[in-house]
Image (tube, rainbow over all chains, first blue to last red; front, side):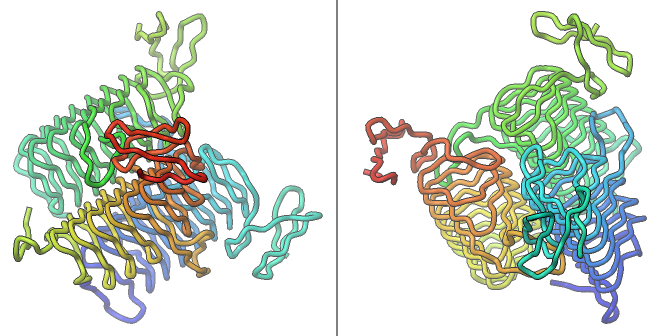
Length: 192
Length: 192
Length: 192
């Protein structure tokens, strides 16, 4: 595949991509047939798959992976180290109608979170840090940090570690098989 | 982005789109990497997003918005002022198998309706005027006009206004916050 | 649309597709804006739709239909005569996180099976021969041959014939309206 590369740290933009912003970070890769509009900000070391669309005004942090076929609309902000699975869908209107413009409530995907393949995130939702939205989930309300949600509509089914694996709390303490430890305090997960 | 524009009323076709029909209406815009086959009819003032496919024989009315990644197969007809959300999916066979061709029951999306992001409409279904199919819904049977459906499978959860907002009937009468009024008569919603 | 065709049996590759493997079988067609990486094997008489991505290492049998917008990741194997509906999604990690690599459990779609539009197949699942996954299903565990599953999560709802139509067993015997006959023996469907 054809490549444009200027230096070892400059971003890679596939020759079939349409990138209209100049704010694509170091070593970030943008793959084929993806369109990124003016006024988009993308951090360093990201990987943006094929057939994506990123609309004016969207901000994406560092080390974030966006798989194929994802559209990010105005009003969506994505943190650092986020994983957005293939075909995950976002919206920016609650009651869309052709010919009727409404407000666009902002949607936020916090750092370290995962949005599974084909999951749908309704406009205005916040997905907390290190939360995991399961494949095919339809998320209609906020998801707290470290939570695991899935289903249509999505409900909370448990917790997950910074590394992504499931964790289970006993006496408000949990240890992931990766070694990381967590405490549950006033309903919030703390990394200890 | 490169453009082909002949006059102020002629359609806009993005240079990376493949448009094989000549029947694209006035001021309709067709975005990148979208393929529209011969024999498709598209009305005026429509907006067809990126990475779409519209198969021979499909008809689309005026002022209809089709967001990114939507495929419309032979047997699908879309009215005026319809909103089809990103990644909404249509089918044209009930029991598809490679190597076994079956009948393609027609699918109809009536004027003013909304199909939410990632919703799936099974072959043969009619979505009534001003109905709203929620994001991620899997629609297996007809949806009556002004109805709101969602879930997998989709069920009727209420009603919505011409403008798209939810409305609630009391004593068979409803007033939307936009000011429009409706009456419920023999199970049908009438705009009054 | 532009075409490259060398002989009556050579594959057809659309001019906008990026095909990096040389192992595309006879009479197989690959449509626009689809990317097939090196090291992919695709059999004869297949039809690969637009806006697809097929990653290195994937194997696809003969006479298989893959509709638009499907991504097949490393670790996925597809048999002969399979139908993959538009927008069907596959995954290759159970707990994906940006920056954390895990094992990729293999996913297998056996010959004659159907994966409906927008269905999601989790990593590590096997879909048995002639099974049908309904549109929008989220498949979290193996599906036995000839089974029909749908819903989120997907559950077994019945059986289907080699031709794709539903069949019902009475006294452990079933005859499809196409004439094919089946027997249920120790929980397994046998074609008789």
